[in-house]
Length: 566
Ligand code: ATP
Ligand code: MG
Image (cartoon, rainbow, N blue to C red; front, side, top):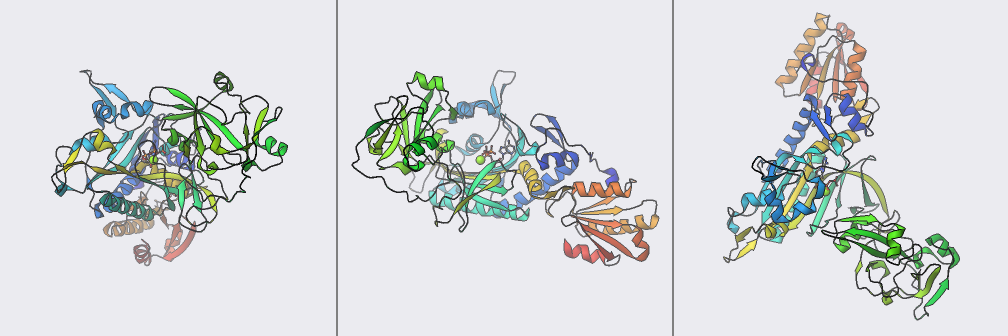
């Protein structure tokens, strides 16, 4: 390709709402153009990067025997009714009717469609396992589309679905997909962590996320400093700390605590550490058809992890409660606690189990209890609801846990029979009995990967593409196209690269040299060969984008040099 033919409208200005480097640079480099909130056009350079990523994905998934299909984007809402997700997905699901008044949705994910594709067609264990995938547009009407390609409403996902006759076989496939996804990220030269993830309301036994490490990432990861353990903060656990046990058989005592509400104030007042105080957190949980205030109890030095809290009660959403709503339930803010016959759902953190001699609110303004035993709480619902803190101990090895920021680029999930049951998809096992398919589902954010690569690979001058993702690996820049000698040599090198399968661009534009250089740095070709004045002395210059290092190379050597480097 010649630069003079390339449609890449670069600009100096970044859009005013661009907070991420990837968003600003993709627009400035002429890779994408915004259509509306969360909707983008991919221009030639953006499409080339996307194609490169897709090629790598297809190669790697091909190696594990996954087969590519392409399902209809427009999906009959009926299928979503069968799975029950039409309600659960809420407003992210775009619904519309056709001229005959049939309801459809724009697929945000394709579990239902994929089960529908094989049900009553794959009927015997002999046809299993089966792994089908597609690379396809998805639509999610995100509440806050932002960050360019990172969180858009229309985006491209590689989504795979596998069908098995046993859980062992699902485990094998899950591991194979994990290895395959890791290879894809390795080939893209990304540094990442595979972390344990929240399996959410869909349930399922195992779920992992592939997180590209970047300070701009929206996800918080908990990672161990001495072993491989890593988990999304929504799913992270910790080794139980050794807190001093309270004394048993202490008498329960009501204490006047005028206007003393916070954990800090209480620990000063009672001359104790925060972990000896029961923290009460009230939240409103949204269910399918109602909402309910739920009280969560944890140690005073811990905080509530909302996703864990939500999973513990099986709701769809979790929101804060205001003081008036609390008052209506006779719950005094600052003095709430687990004692008494409360007609309200209560969840106690596992870490408090069988704890004694604690301090807690008395559900009466200006009063707390001391000498309280957790076993006196009238609930039997214990769950892990705490957010792991930096400095907590690793659940695997006892090492120290810390935080990192990550971008979720992939999610792999052991679904089990959730969807095959809901959509009644069965096969006959080797004893001739009907069983539901055991499923896995695997998703990779292909368009999000474009942004993720940039988040990890850019500098103040622009993007720095990795070799396998770059729209062009080599940019041959003619410094002054009026010099025939420069043009001729550039053409010769260009043809050589093409013949040898090097993805090459020839910058034959009549722009000034300085402008061309700025553009090359902004667009981020891994290598730029500058053909300029030095050609008279038999030399060209090679600019490595990552280091910005320039090397003089004899013109006859540049051919072999490029072959070896690439
Ligand atoms: P997130 O937590 O970031 O909203 P998700 O957990 O809802 O993502 P999945 O349903 O697991 O996403 O989808 C699989 C992959 O699709 C994600 O790992 C991510 O890479 C990509 N993806 C999801 N939502 C978007 C989006 N709005 N824009 C771009 N890519 C997305
Ligand atoms: Mg996910």
